[in-house]
Length: 623
Ligand SMILES: *[C@@H]1O[C@H](CO)[C@@H](O)[C@H](O)[C@H]1NC(C)=O
Ligand SMILES: *[C@@H]1O[C@H](CO)[C@@H](O)[C@H](O)[C@H]1NC(C)=O
Ligand SMILES: *[C@@H]1O[C@H](CO)[C@@H](O)[C@H](O)[C@H]1NC(C)=O
Ligand SMILES: *[C@@H]1O[C@H](CO)[C@@H](O)[C@H](O)[C@H]1NC(C)=O
Ligand SMILES: *[C@@H]1O[C@H](CO)[C@@H](O)[C@H](O)[C@H]1NC(C)=O
Ligand SMILES: *[C@@H]1O[C@H](CO)[C@@H](O)[C@H](O)[C@H]1NC(C)=O
Ligand SMILES: *[C@@H]1O[C@H](CO)[C@@H](O)[C@H](O)[C@H]1NC(C)=O
Image 1 (tube, rainbow, N blue to C red):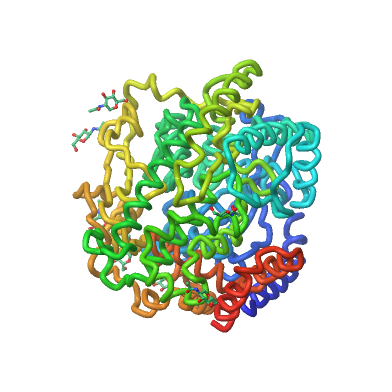
Image 2 (cartoon, protein in one colour; image 1 turned 90 degrees about the horizontal axis):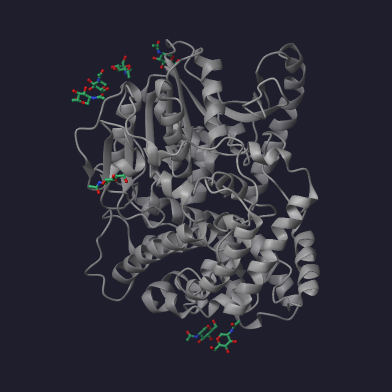
């Protein structure tokens, strides 16, 4: 907590200093398309970083119409180097969430610092918000929020439940107090449909159709025009949903494509043309299978069949990895939340993990692994926060036109299909329900600009072969073996698959990192199509690997002091990242959890688990 308030104090101080400075310089740059604004959050601690807003037309079909702006963050080229251009970087899940330390900005800082030194400072490295996400005060069209507080949200659900004759079974944090049944799922689907209707009535929705991947591509092209001149080549590195922007950049502006990296790209045709609920179900099944088999093989009593990762990763770090992965899985896939008691009944989790391992790490928790995951989960934004999350973007990109009749029909079907879906991922949660972004059939708005239909593409000319990076054992990413699915009609795609997972940060010393940096630095194409795992040299420092519950906080502090981002680089890979999320979240905000639990106790609930949490939490705080 000291760490939290220190950071906050520093942020506020720097913010107040900067805001006075910026206000006066803004006037002189009134007519310029890019306006500096004070950096916020972690960004204020990195020297050289420039934050700003870039002016764009709200509707790209009418450039002279109303204007909006997109927030950007720039890691500028070195002043003593000959500037060669710009590289745009767009992180995706799990970096798109507002985790405390692990968010898109910290990921960007980590990658940008590396790229800056790899390129000898010859490129501006730029991160641009996506319309429909990002701070609503900085990016317009920005995030669409429907409620001012959880209390308001809850009031809406209570009223609507009463109207519909549904018995509400959640607490003031919108956590379900018991395991949900099929009937509850049907009710929740009905309530979510009403919620979306309510949101759309509540405020002006005209800007929502100008959100979407096509507009995001045009925003980047326009910023490249501004920075590097009209017609310049656009270098782009995108991850997960960020990769979709790079993907469509190639089809919308093939002549502008510079070096384009698509890391863990989703199937673009599935993204636009498949039913979002079915896509979700496939993704959940895949993720669950990957996590479960890994947990069974590496966390159970018999670890002999574990496809082991880095040698220095002990079983405790593995457990933290699992906890973090489960918390991420919930935030990505589960559109409702259970409270601690309801999920403490999750016996699947405790049956796959060796109880001795849990006891070793959490001696006071009586092996209630679900309870630990739940604590971690509480640190992460609920699936759809106070608004619609990514629903306006993802659902707006759907190719199928909306019709109320089709929507109603599909809602009935989904209500029926939920019966089979509810218990499809018992390791993630005792019961699951899709998040809003996977319920596109209830979303009535489509993006003003439709994405090109990639099913029709026979051939396109791209001067520099794009680079596709895939991962074989990532729960949140299903590899696509047929590259024509990702990039139909593009010849000479370079693709690399990483086979093993591990502490695989992107540094010039790791296999994937070396390939990305070589490609972005001077267009060098990989000579291999497989990375078996991180290189031998990529072993995280022993203290980092062996002390998962305490190392991250001190590491982040030292990162702040040095204003470099080694921690992020070391941990940007899968396993390290996720345990870092869990460990830092737990360590840093234990007090918050205590408060939540205390409120709960005041209401008379959770007495049984309460004492165990309290002792665990005081242990954490003394870290
Ligand atoms: C630019 O400046 C940095 C730091 O001052 C220095 O390390 C680097 O060598 C310089 N580069 C060139 C090309 O002079
Ligand atoms: C960066 O500078 C070093 C030393 O001057 C040089 O060896 C290296 O080739 C440069 N790298 C790039 C990408 O220009
Ligand atoms: C947990 O499981 C037990 C036994 O199956 C059941 O009686 C209890 O109601 C469950 N608790 C919750 C919160 O679902
Ligand atoms: C669970 O924890 C309580 C209090 O810490 C302890 O008394 C009890 O023996 C533990 N139960 C098991 C099964 O370890
Ligand atoms: C790869 O995908 C393309 C486009 O979906 C399809 O036409 C082609 O037959 C596929 N190739 C293989 C080997 O499956
Ligand atoms: C693809 O690569 C081959 C061999 O490197 C080259 O001859 C050919 O021109 C390339 N095609 C395109 C479309 O770039
Ligand atoms: C790109 O850089 C790498 C290492 O910095 C070097 O080995 C390679 O020859 C360069 N390629 C080109 C085409 O300049």
